[in-house]
Length: 256
Image 1: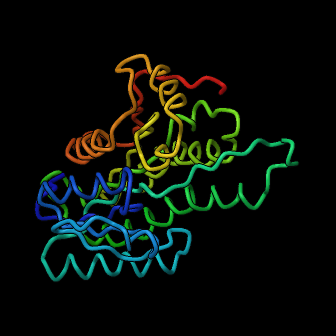
Image 2 (image 1 turned 135 degrees about the vertical axis):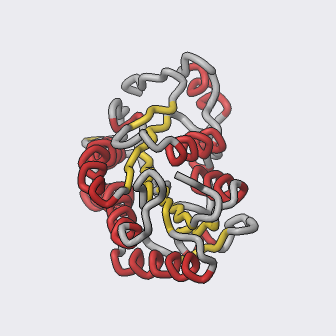
């Protein structure tokens, strides 16, 4: 799949994995439409070739409006929407039963709504529009990259909601790839390990050192630009479809 002269949607685009991927795609010649919450966009980096649209991925109507905005940009600039990368997500921690009582069902539902339902919403409404594209030389009309986590395989203590949501993204990958094959749209997922994102900015040096030491090699946190590089590889490799790729330095998460 060609990246240059295409339009791409990236969710969670204002920070972390989304911001790194947005900047990387723009540097490769894509026109990028970044989705994020309005308050997050206010502090998003300014990047040439990137426009931001306020979208709550849990709201199907907001997603539809965001996709329509991306399609309008694509039409105006003659750059078809062919790429979607879902990075939006949250990762709160709570045990099923703790001193505070039972895990709040509303928190569980919120995590699943953002991480899993939000991913599906953007995938589905964008795929509907990409299915109308003219196919490229390989018969492709688009490609979607979703973001799971190693927690979807080895969720730690306190990650029951997060693990369930990311496990759903993992399971959705092959089914979505098969559903969309008839439309020439590929679907792959990246499952990162521990990545240096704003969510880790507040942890202590001691905790950070322990995280880095838990990674066999290289014994460090992954960088957001490494996620962006892997995403662009999956976009460019036309035979990669229905795959979940771990990006974790051979890490297998311990219980805590």
